[in-house]
Structures are given as C-alpha cells and as structure tokens.
Image (cartoon, rainbow, N blue to C red):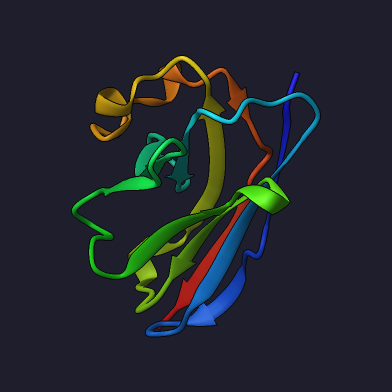
Length: 129
C-alpha cells in the first residue's frame, strides 16, 4: 500500500507563505487523484485542492482560489501545495490523500474525504495575526 508523508508545515504570520509537500512511497500508479485537505480543531475535514495526474488539472476550494497552487513532480513522486497570502483562518492540520479510482471529472469536483483510500498523517500550519 502506498504511504504518504506530508511536510513543510510551520508557523507564519498572516500574509506569509508556505509550501507543503506530499511524498509517496511504495507501490503507486501513474494515474491518480490527489487531494489536499485541512482540519481545524472542532471542524470537519475540508477539501482544499485536488490534482489529477493524467493532465495535471487542478481544482480549488473557493476559500483558497487565487492564493494556493497545487502541482506535481512525478519524477519525485511528490505533490506540492504552495500557499501564499496565508490568513489566520488557514490554520489547520493539512493532510494529503490519494486515490487511483477517482475519475478526472470527479477529481475536479473536490471529492469528499471518504472517497480517498490512502492518507498521510498531516502537517500543522499555524498562521498568526
């Protein structure tokens, strides 16, 4: 089973930037839907962005559109989430998840967490004012 490891979280001031990484280890496939999710204390896990590997098409939640960018480096088996213009409300634990069954069309609709079979353990992002 593929293992996902997130990194790159930290503490920044509002307006700052971070780049999260999601590295995949073990068996994997070239076609996948990878999503970044976040979960703040007391809140449900929410989708932030997805990328479909076949054509690198990306989709973003409205709350991060224009500020976050998801990208993939297939040679490194890594997907990135560049986060600019961070806001206090972006503070959360960030997780990446991958699934090899989700279609391109569905991947672009920001599938809910239950659709993903493989998850990382998360990386904490804290934004202070």
